[in-house]
Length: 461
Ligand code: ADP
Ligand code: ADP
Ligand code: MG
Image 1 (cartoon, protein in one colour):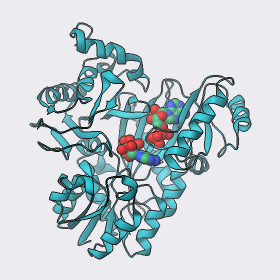
Image 2 (cartoon, protein in one colour):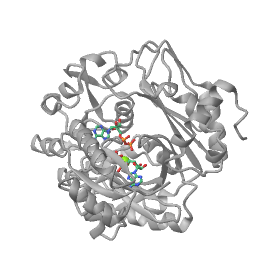
Image 3 (cartoon, protein in one colour):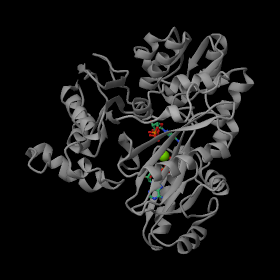
Image 4 (cartoon, protein in one colour):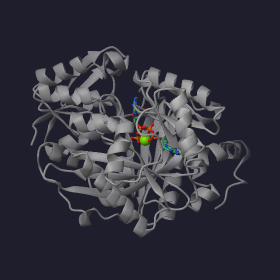
């Protein structure tokens, strides 16, 4: 087992990794930017190294600075968290060159899955159903038009290098395509430095269902059930739950096996997520694989009892998975709410500021993952997510009631957050019935926000 690990991240996920390391008796080295001198991960790590200015490109994304810190502080491994360098194949390769274990799959696997067009091709070859679409990238608008004609409208243009919901455009007719193509390409170019696009059939009113998988170096691959992440805004997740109301036991079994096949076909190691869209007829299609720990991983931890970050570290050290497929059974129901420092009433405008006061919920079946504390000032340079509230209960309704109670207890003063909106969703009839898809939030946003100003008459119990 490792003795010392560098954590190449910040915020709640850096704390999450520090906690797992402490329980394993592993020392931690935090890295931080000049804007994060007062951040909690700096306090809680065994030691901390400043790696540059506030801008991510000069600190958390500065591979040389991160690797130098790791080597000079005598670390044996690097945990990348999510975002930042976590899906950077070059970084994983460089870790290896420096004699460090990258806690995740190999650079080659990251590269293969990071290019969504090549990931689709691999999955197709392995018999995993993929969304009908172009074979690989399209060279120009004309080729995109030909594919769209072939697949049939509506379609979606997607960046092969995409992530975080960016570089995607829905297209409903050939007239719209050229403009959408230019917009998606420009966004992909700006966000990922790569404007390559591919074409996919737009699945109407799908649910986003993803499977957590874990693989060790001994050939064991298991899945830990699904997460329903259909409550989204601009293709970004806001609330997640496990299990999903949309799956029958048979469909769960079939999709779980497809997820395991997906991991096997690329020689996966560690924790990963296989994302699918599920249509109204029970047909599911692979959309992408995330080769890292996911924001919403606690939902799975709550229902399976497995510590996923601990397992990541163990399998990176060459140990076998500490549980079998049968032992990874799902029990009860878990929900996560992401709390972002943004104002839903003002187009979800990010609102960084000083945390005047924070109080988190607690009690039975409640988990809070956050790096906030009283007086902590949010930096505009980083992600707006300030906390994740996760609840677990024997039933879905029990989990919903528990989450409402948690959000009533939650107090964050200093800036608006998305928690109030999540609270309203927990009263919406369609959510309560489990009848929601990825269009839910967009379709009901106005209605939900009107409850906020005019009381709860519209809400169903
Ligand atoms: P998850 O399913 O784990 O929520 P997200 O796509 O929301 O995955 O990504 C997790 C974090 O990483 C978010 O903060 C998101 O903004 C960031 N992220 C993911 N992919 C990329 C990318 N390709 N470029 C920049 N940031 C990304
Ligand atoms: P990212 O890497 O940004 O997370 P994904 O490929 O996972 O991109 O897609 C993000 C979201 O966009 C999905 O959760 C889903 O809601 C929607 N989406 C993606 N592909 C399709 C599709 N072909 N049809 C309908 N919705 C899609
Ligand atoms: Mg995704």
